[in-house]
Each structure stands twice: as structure tokens, then as C-alpha cells.
Length: 395
Image 1 (cartoon, one colour):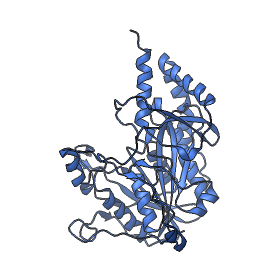
Image 2: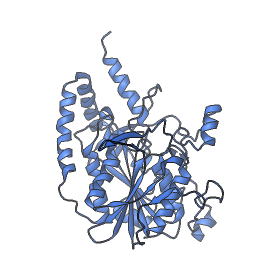
Image 3: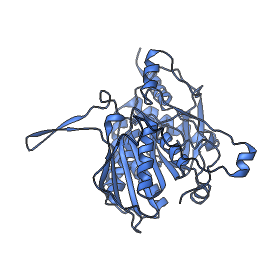
Image 4: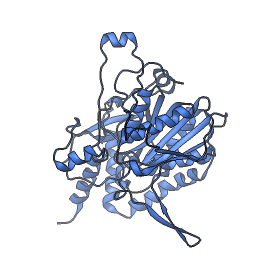
């Protein structure tokens, strides 16, 4: 499915917002809360930050980061742009904005290195996930890893990391095989396999890049076009004030009205800082691809622990979208053990147990609000948790 008309708005993705997974905590003060309903579970309590306007930092460090394209430091902010009545009536088409020709353009720099060149497929699906800001509890990347095993995907290409990563922040590692040392770089890889009905499926998995996000997304768009991709599925995970034994909520949004109606999704109304998933969804929207973004919730108070439960929930939602039954796997076993392991962790810490119980009680008591109002600030949630724990410390 390749949409021919742009949906109203900027196509920002973050589905339900962006999540800073496993991020260092900040010193911001407690911010107001919002209650939101989610399908099949109790209301979630999130933090609504006082200001999520687009803010570009000032000073020489910020200017240098912007000049280098360091969007992990200066995150772009999504915004909704209302079409004029004339443009809406005319059904303005998608516009493919290609990079300027020059030293840094795709025409001159080979960012994608092919191991083999598959023939373009029909109705190919692309699934993308990136560790870091949009990957609370490693749920998105673990889900993508499971799906590429499930669909027997094999490597066909990788993206050269030299242009997109700060190796002082995302360091390569040394591997020794048969006495030979090898540098393992943080390289996003591209694999291809087949869904059960024979449709090709492409996976893109890696670390969120730190530099030149627009060029990075252009590399993926060019690759998707060459492989006959029609629909792009992005995966993310966000921190919410939810209990670890509560059902995992998977929410999603699409830029395709028909998909929204058929799958019970909606076009995102999120505005604020975003990650590479948001930028990639916007690029797909502008390039004319149908895009769908699925996000799973992860409890804030165990944000440092991997969540196979959330990973499984994401994988099952993708399976539902593709019309595929995934069957039992090692991910199911890990998800089944997750609740028991976190129960033991919480039971061994009185203050953590009290906090978890407080979440249960408040989730049951809070009023239901419109889900479209959801705005995420995971840093604020972590601040709240740390403030709670500090209050429990003896004088």
C-alpha cells in the first residue's frame, strides 16, 4: 500500500509520544500528571511537562552540535501543521524531498553497503527499531530481533556508521575469534526474509544515530524504494507509571486513514521532542510510504531492566497487523518469567514495593481522560520515582 495523498499534519510519529529509555535522570521539579485510558487495562498516570515547545539550546556547545547535525543532543520537535482549506480540498500529494547534490549527498557518499542485492519485492514490509531514546526496557529492539528470527531474515546490507555516530558516545567493541582481534562497530544492519504468506519483510535494527538524522533516514528511504517496500512499521517503547503485572499496553498510529480505521489506530497528535523513530516516520510520510508506529509501555520503576513482556506484546501486535500467528518461542518463556522476577525484586525492597502498590491504587482511582492528549516525559517520571524514594529515607 503506497498512499498518494499526505495526511493533514506534519506526520510526526511518535505514535503516542517519545520515550527516553534508560536515560540519566534530570533535576527537574515535579510536574503535573495526566491520566489516560489504554485498551484492556487500568488508567496510566503520566507526566505532562510544563513546556514542550521547540527549544534549541543556546551557546557554543549547542551551535557546534547543530552544525555537526548532532540531533541526539539537540532533538528536533514535532509539530502539527494545519493545511489551508484550498490545499485540503486539492488533496496535496506527498512530496519527495531529495538531498542537495554535493559532498554530503547520497549521490556522492555510499552510506549503504550491500552484501547482496535482492530483487524488488511486491508489498514488501519494512520493520525498524533502534536502541536508545525510543527503546525503554529494550522492548523495541528485542521485539525486532525476535521478528527477524521468526521470519528467517538474513543479512543483505548494513549502514556505514562512520557518518552517523559519535564513537566516543557509542563505542565499538573488540572481539577475539580464534586468536584474531576484530573491531565490532555499532553498525545498523538490514536483513530480509518472508512473512508466512510469502510477502518479503525487511528489518532495520541498530543503535539510534547521533548525527545527521535526515541523511540517515534518506538512506533508509532509498533502500526501501529499491526493495519495493510499500509499508514501514516502526517499533518503540516508552516509560509510563504502570504496574509490572498489568497488561502491556501497545498503542499505535498511522499516516494512512484506511489503516487507522481498520486497525483501530489514529493519526498522531503528539508535539514535542522526538527520537529517530519520529524523524523516520515523518520521512516515510513525505516519501509516500504508508507508515505504522507501535509503542509498548514499560514500568518506570524498573526502567533499567529488560522487559521481554513488552517485547512480546509488540511482536504480537505486529503479527496481528501482518495477519500472522507467531506461535510459542523463547520470548514467550522470558515474558512469562518477567513478572516473577520483578515480583522478587520488588518484594526485596520495601520502598519499591510501596511505590508499586501506590501505582496500583492510583491507577484504579484516577479518572479516565482522552488518550489523544497523551504527552510523554519519561525523565519527569524518573524524577518523581527518585523523589518518592528520597522521601522514604530516614532522617
